[in-house]
Amino acid sequence: MSSTTTTIVQDVQLHAKHNEASDSPAGLSACGTGGYPVPGVPKFDDPYKKRQWQLEHMAGAFRVFARKGFTEGTAGHISVRDPVEPSTFWINPLGKHFGLLKASDMVHVNEEGQVIGGNKVAVNAAGFMIHSAIHKARPDIHAACHAHSPAGKAWSTFGRPVEILNQDSCTFYAIQRVYQSFGGVVLEADEGKRLAETLGKDGRVAILQNHGLLTAGSTVDEAAYLFTSLERTCEVQLMVDAAKLPKNIIGDKEAEYTAKVNADPETLYYEFQTDFEYEIWKSKGELSKGE
Image 1 (cartoon, rainbow, N blue to C red):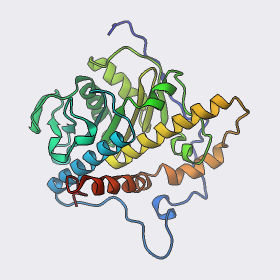
Image 2 (cartoon, rainbow, N blue to C red; image 1 turned 90 degrees about the horizontal axis):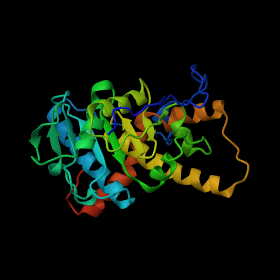
Image 3 (cartoon, rainbow, N blue to C red; image 1 turned 135 degrees about the vertical axis):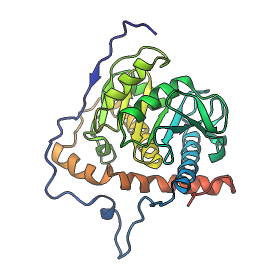
């Protein structure tokens, strides 16, 4: 990787207002009705139980990625911050197919990239550089996902944010960023830091020019759902652009209002549960909810 690579960080908010909508819905509570609450993220008093819960959901996220076709050789990684030792994190082993991963396959690494527990095997060097930098820079981020998914790779070549074209893309209103530089495989710490800087203080998804997609969240479920949704949004964007017809972009007020529900961390966690439960059913006992 050249030391003269120019990094351009584009803070894409698509004209988002800094004031909140006065009549915004209340996140997850707006998703259900009938007199019963919609279950949110579980709370744990025991950090070791939370660790196992995270690892089960992490394995489920990989199974979902495999089913949706996000694999590309050894590329792609998901990380979760360890609740027992928060300066460390868990990541997938290098060279094992997403569709085969279980909680017991995950690797526990420290800030220097050394394996300190879990499955004691090699991890992806580029994955460590990216995820380590993100976890250091953003204490609020507990999970991050990156994979070489087809539509994400295709859209990333333009170095542009996705447009707010429909209800689902409102999720990315004001939280998407674009990293407008490609310096090759991320094997240097400085490149990882620049990627982390792209997210800023409140970004949760990034389009990495000529590379692909990166998403992050307070749970692995949130980060994984953001990834699957952004991948589909890129696919739809490419389809819309291919039609070469005039587009109706959703207005700021409507996009902001919708994002109050769509982009709420608890909502995103809940959105992922349908895919996760399907993977539990498919696994015939290999995966569990970890609760």
